[in-house]
Image 1 (cartoon, rainbow, N blue to C red):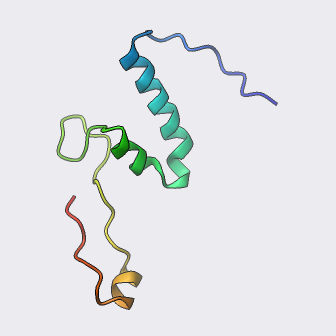
Image 2 (image 1 turned 90 degrees about the vertical axis):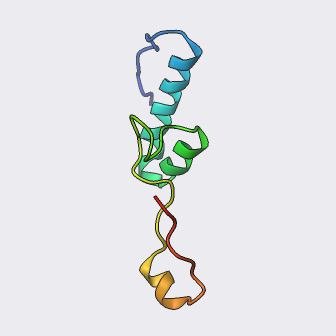
Length: 78
């Protein structure tokens, strides 16, 4: 069983290759919930940047956590 993908045919600059690697990782990590962490780790444009790729840097605390733990801090800023 193979993916039968064609060879990479884009520009061969370090920026273009790293962007393609990041794009492929986004596809892989989307359903695992790790895409946000990967986006932050690679310093991709955030919510206050031009051309942002994400709407926030941190997720708010779940309501269940807030209801069950009085020590839960305030939700992080976007």
